[in-house]
Each structure stands twice: as C-alpha cells, then as structure tokens.
Image (cartoon, rainbow, N blue to C red; front, side, top):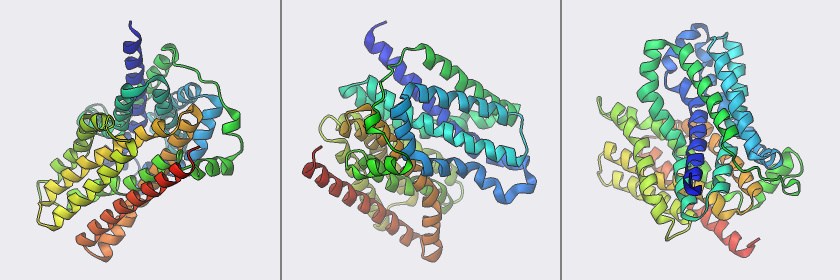
Length: 387
C-alpha cells in the first residue's frame, strides 16, 4: 500500500469517527418523536436530551484543546470512541429518564473528545492540497451524519426499534476505536509548556491569540444561524415544500463546500474563503428582499454557507503550525460552535416573534457582517503581531 493511499484511508477513518460523533446528536434528534414516546411523563424535559451535549461543549471546549495537547490526540480519540460506544450500549437498555439524561452528559464529553482529536490528527497527517481537501471533507461530517440518519436511520428505527438503533451506534463506535488502534496513527509528543495551567489559563491562551481563536470566533457567528435557520425556514414555506427544502439546504452546503473550497484555497487564504461565503450570504438575503422566492433563497443561502464551513476548518492548520495550537483551536471551535447552537434558535425566534420575517433576515445579515468585520480585525492583529 502506497503512503498516499494509507494516509487517505486514515483520513476516511477519522471522518467516520466524526460521523459517529455527529450521530450522538442525530440519534436523538432525527427520531425525536420515538424518543418522546419513551418518556411520556417528561415532555417538558425532552429538549435537554438534545441540548445537554451542546452545553458540555460550550463550557469545556477550550479546555479539551489543552487536554489534547497533554495526552495526545490519538489517546483522546480512542478514549472518546470507547466511552461513546459504551454509553450508546447503555442507552440501548432504555434506562429511566434521569439516567438517560445523565448518560447524555457523559456522552457530551465523548463527543467533545472526538471532534477535537480527529481534526487535529487529520491536520497532522496531511499536507498542502491534500490537507485542504481533507479538512473540507471533515467539515461535512455533521451534515452528512444527519442526512444518513434521516435516510437510513428512521426506516431502521421503524423496523427494529430504538434499542437496536442505539446498540448499532455503540458497536460502530467500538469498531472504529479498534481500527484507530491498529492503523498506526502518529503519536505526537505533548508540549506541556504550550498547554500548562487550568481552565482559566486554557481560555486566556486560546482567545488572546488571533491565530488560535480566529476560526472559532468566526464559527460562532456561523452556528448562530445554521441550526436555527434549518429549524425555522422550512416552517415559513408553503405547505408541501418544507420537507424537501429542509433536506436540500444542508446538502447544498456540503456539495458546494466539497466542490469549491479546495479550488478556492489554491488562490486565496482560508479566512478569505470564509469571508467570501459570509459576503455571499448577505447578498443572498438581499436577493430575497428584491423578490427572490424564499425556497430558492433558503437553498442558495445554505449553499454559500458551505464556503464558511469548509474554510473555517481549513483555517486551523493554515493559521497554526504546531499540533498543540491546532488542538486548542479545534477545541475553541467546538466551544464556540456549541455556544452558537445553544443561542441561535432562541435569539432568532425572539427576533421573529417581536418583529417579522424581514427583521429576522436583517438580523442574520447583520450577524454575517459582524463576522466579516471580526475576521478583518483579527487579520490586522495577525499582521501587527505575526508571532
């Protein structure tokens, strides 16, 4: 087996680990109606079964990057996969609500370990154009996992039930852990001087640096709108269009990210690709105000946001050379992404309820404009303080 083929297979394996991590969200979100039937006396708390993972990531994201630098991404990835597999097997027993909720808290730690360690490893084992392609592939893991769970998971649950569905996910996570253990991924020595200190030190080190923090801070604005618009827009469409558009929106972003981002990264920086996507998002919203159909605009908006998706993940290794700095940056992306997911839907719904649809889209355009300005300011800081 040639070196390039071996690296390609390792990247695919790490991407599959990401699919498993995203399924930790999707296995409850996609068959949510079936999950609700399990706990009819806890209808008011069912939402926590989804959001508690985001809460853990929002609190501990930056710290996970520091831990990655200390213990090494391979060990952290294996720990996350084994823990996640075990938790899914526990959930397959359909425990009581309190224990299921507690299992989701622990599962949040597993998810965080995977989504920080796996892209750090991808950045370490790839270089140049191959790295750009690999990071764009990694950036699609969340959308692809949700699509696969919707297409195949729902029919599977209908036929075999939630316990087998959860158990299958647990088994997949453990199989991936076994493959990671045998595929000879590089074990990078930790750099304790870069990640010394505790919770506060990890955050100060991460967010004081315009190199480490830039992908994550821009990612926050992206995630403020991604899940929220995916939840809100289909319901604003004429009857019969919502389901189809809801499926097309994330797929449009994945396709454009796969096709365009690797090519654009040959001629511009990753942050420039992000700003291009944000700028096109603003123009797409302007087209809506000029009379473009909401269905077409929704798909087009998510398509151009694919540039933000792919460019943001590619920015981490482009801006940060060392493995530990990359781990901190991916940890910050996990933290800011989870914070955006937590806040986005309540914020946009509040704007929608207090105003109207126009006000909501103006707010979204302002969010993208703020992200562009923030990236420009961070770029000035990087040029002023290049180390």
